[in-house]
Image (cartoon, rainbow, N blue to C red; front, side, top):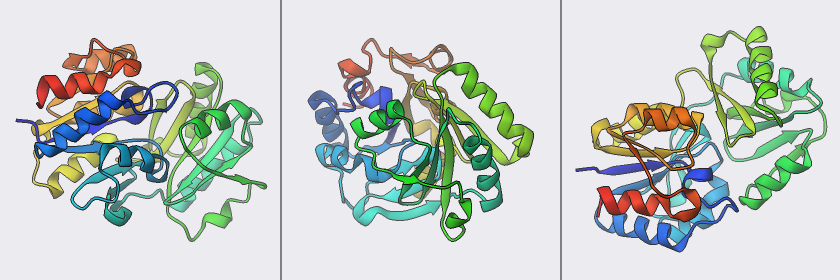
Length: 273
């Protein structure tokens, strides 16, 4: 019996327009009524999906949980209480940021525990974020020392092509010891840098231990490469129909529906209800 579902948001649970469907919301409510935890496991900040938690009937609820920043932060939904903060070392985050900030085509995101800052925001990326309820503050100067007293969860860059994102990864790894980084790609637009050992999978297992849930009792659903660690860490890895090839290859179940047609409801109806 599965006791917890960890689920990516963008391009997995959410429609392309960033909305949560009524059918997915109803299935999540049915799963939680049965005692199964439903845990959003997103690269985004928890602040950006509070309205979606409301629709799931999980917002501000005790004994319900969320994972943000690719595993950087585990929260209890009641009061958004941090249970685990897996922040980046300041010197590592600064070095990553400086490589991103030097690229005029990149929008470089700095996720602190509660606020997203963007240096050199670009219109396409900003529109994508706003559609998903993600608010941010623009960094007017590349002065990273302003974050010295803050928890830095991750640093990511938005770039228009796969090759530019791969080139950004190479550029960062030329400046920063790659053993200090967990690097992933997401949403067909981002290259993401977390601290080594921190990812969606490590956080899923970490939360499972807190709840006395074994990895084999967890379902994980995703679509992109930053979801791979959680798919590899759990008992039932699921790819939505629109998942990239390596995600489908990793999955034990591939949904018939894509993210725009209630893929998560399909998973819950098949394996939980």
